[in-house]
Length: 318
Image (cartoon, helix red, strand yellow):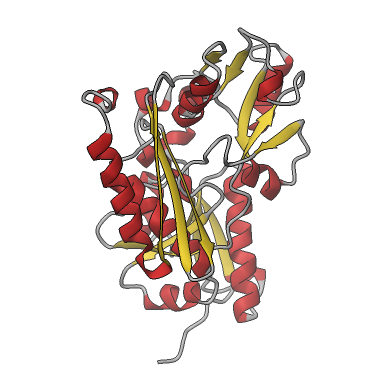
């Protein structure tokens, strides 16, 4: 069957959130599709969709995500537009994505993964080790909060939300002495901020951090064929393991979970950890398997942690 390519008269509609980072990811997706099929920019339409997670009153209130909702905050309205046919594909930051998609939708296209590390950002200090006792660190990530308090329980961690510019302004106003951002986002935006990359051995990243995923309707064969042309199999293999680990633990924005899969030859190495929100306890697992068994490895590591966790470890999740 001949593939019917989009044209300026009938463009492929790409759904995205409206943040600078989300738009950069949508533009990258468009550029890769243009190159793969020798298409002009006008053969695509970027459709900005406001999600519940983009509500300025909620964002500016510095309320924890667990009080506002879950990962669906950043995807629900976009997926509704995809299901209704208002858009043809949807571009997502994979660390925001629930592990299960609505019926009729599928996530099977991933772009090459960016830097997975977290960045330490401060106008005063060079790194976590330089923070004095009692220093204030701002973060909206339950994972980063728990990981930081696990190694530095002497620090004061406060809720800290907003885009990069907002967070830098807060640092300048001494709302906090430091914060964390994802290296991937800073790189994609080309932002030069006072940062230091934190090695993964010191701070295990969020599941799928640094990865862009593209969602489509399950029955849309044109979108499937086009996305197959830009799919990065290595990213897909790594995320299969990480997201299976997350799914097994029933992870969400309320869950302090870190995980990272890397490919070594024909094998995949996965590390994962769970923490209590106050950082008082951390449990880790790791394993190696053939790449084709990455999802099974993720589930196995998750099940081992569930079995080993002491009674009450997950009570905070209810």
